Length: 388
Ligand SMILES: Cc1cc2nc3c(=O)[nH]c(=O)nc-3n(C[C@H](O)[C@H](O)[C@H](O)COP(=O)(O)OP(=O)(O)OC[C@H]3O[C@@H](n4cnc5c(N)ncnc54)[C@H](O)[C@@H]3O)c2cc1C
Image 1 (spheres, helix red, strand yellow):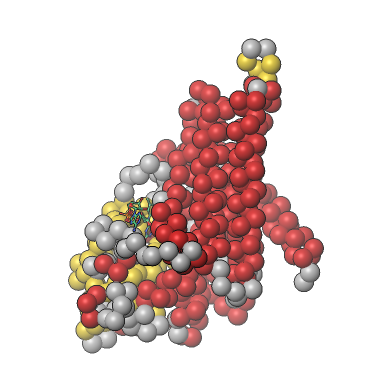
Image 2 (cartoon, rainbow, N blue to C red; image 1 turned 30 degrees about the vertical axis):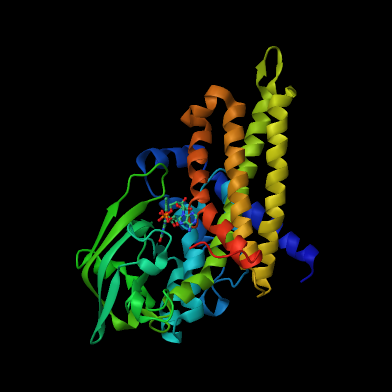
């Protein structure tokens, strides 16, 4: 396929996702935000349209598309004022299963995930005491015959109450036992339907934004040994493999948010009259919007570059990180400028700005904070000494 045809395909995806999103307007998201509800109908609509299974190969019931298509879907959701966070994790979590799972695991789970009969939305990595230093996680999985016994705690495990399966990172060997601090961790596909009430407890966290995040407690939870994905002890490496996809997809969501804020702010600036002229005529209002536009389009070039490299199977760690950093900064700046352009009305729920403002702020912190990306670039690109 040549570039022109590919662009036509991406435009067709944009058009149809936009149409789907028209059925889920601001009121829909506002109500959920107020109630901290889960957008079940929206996620069902995306699943039925085949969008959530877009990265799953056709042989397992998905549509076998690339990350650019997946990113276009999520960007369009955000550009339309919605939020893909309720379901975006499925797109990148399933990559661990696809790349490192056994053929039996793939045939058992991927078609069910592609059809929406099973949800793989929960990713249990972060713990309260280890912070970004994942090598210090304390959750353990100890082999006992045909099972593993899991003990420990995760925090900020988003969507756990709305997922059937969780991809869990746990220690199967102590940190000190390996050659490297990240050795000795393994990943498991935990079926939470059987586990809740039998060693698994999920507690919602009331947060600044509606992200359905939870704390998850493991108390002698027994899971079948067949839940292990790939080889024991290599889990961290498997998770790292999926991080580029996660960063690229989330960077595109940020671009969608930034474009939404700029369009919303510009439309208001043309319409709102103060001192007998549209506020958009004042350069104090125009310039910040123009600056955000330039920043967003520059970040979008990096997000596209990262996605293209990913789809070509080329190394893209640096680009994926830069895309996430620049796009999260661009969307956060655009959010602030949109707030300022709207004046007091920005604070009223009905314009969706304060909701999107809270939502887009997350991506300067999660899934990886800005400092850690800068540290990656400093060390791996500029060759500066490692600081930790
Ligand atoms: C709403 C929400 C949803 C989330 N969803 C999930 C999820 O589904 N699954 C999951 O596993 N996790 C999830 N997370 C967790 C998220 O990935 C972490 O919060 C994030 O990676 C930051 O880790 P931390 O909170 O432990 O911060 P810390 O690691 O404690 O860092 C705190 C601050 O110190 C800085 N810092 C730390 N180390 C360094 C260093 N070496 N150099 C410079 N600065 C440093 C950081 O940049 C940050 O600003 C979610 C978080 C939120 C808020």
